[in-house]
Image (tube, rainbow, N blue to C red; front, side):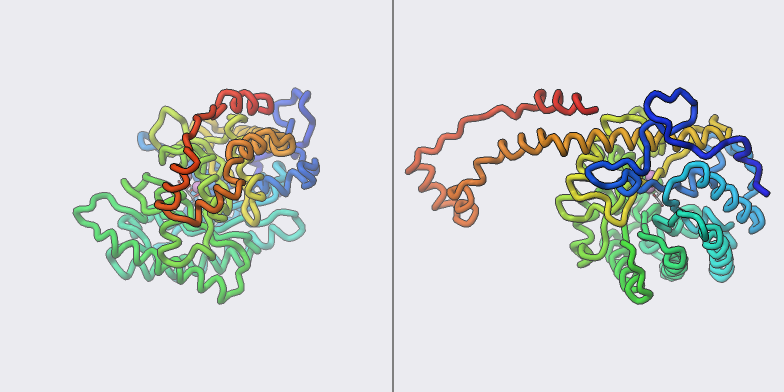
Length: 435
Ligand code: XLS
Ligand code: NI
Ligand code: NI
């Protein structure tokens, strides 16, 4: 017995670049070796439960557009049917992972005890479904932003009872993630920020957030969870200002609370754009600190000022992202999560399949282009040449000296730097040969 929702849609196969079937992998070929490693193991794709199964097609101006067999989502029977549909979808797509929030997989009960009981029940059911399938949980997380109790924050709430409810909620979600063999646990601070400084003690809220994250890390070790704890930067929306603004802000925060050895970053393309950065900027910032953990590969519309969460479809952008990821040594325990939703007019099961298949192909093409650039070595050679002066003894000794000694050397050697081309157009043309 199936839910019927995906009836008539066969498992998606790799058919190669010349395939003209509407739904097929043209570039994503899990077993193909890229730099000596299977493509599936590089990309580690995950489907996001919230956008693909829980979101009903609403926007700020109108409600539900999707009608699914698992609606209404207010009872456990429908929650199970949603799990059934999700696994039917995973069988079609063949991706290796999924991600969830507690609120996506069980209906909100209005109190902690019942939230806990229903989360245990549904994650047992998910665990049963995982048996005999080669699919894993990339990460779990707690939705501490939708229900009204979180409106003034979770760990940063002025009310200590909300902090307590948040602590219990994260414990339950970390336990459930551990039970499902999850490889990471994510904290995105949806309401961890402020609407106005007129009513906000920012310093106290940041201290509470730091203390909360330390408790999460302690609990992870206590239960023997081997996965990585990740925080996800985003500058604004839903809060006017969010404390995890961007990668650099998060790194400063982790350092301040002594957590930089314990927590890494889950970077999202769309959030990078909202913060006024490129995605590769955020990846490079995290990589330079060894804190690149995982990615949410959903783009934003460049004309809209909000988080439109669209499936990626820009190969050159994706290629540069994977270039930085490969350069940093890959995603480790992380993966490529599609925190992406359909457009609200895309009503059909086929749309959901097509959104993911297209995105996986775009990422596969990007990965192959990135690997080709790494293997060719052109960008790396250009970088080495640009910084070659720093590989001399004189330059290295200078870093250990002081302003006065350097001044003496500038005078004695009559140092008078000659500007050199940054060669940007040449490098851009180089990249375009690969994408
Ligand atoms: C929202 C975030 C969210 C996190 C998980 O903008 O991207 O979906 O990834 O809570
Ligand atoms: Ni995200
Ligand atoms: Ni987002």
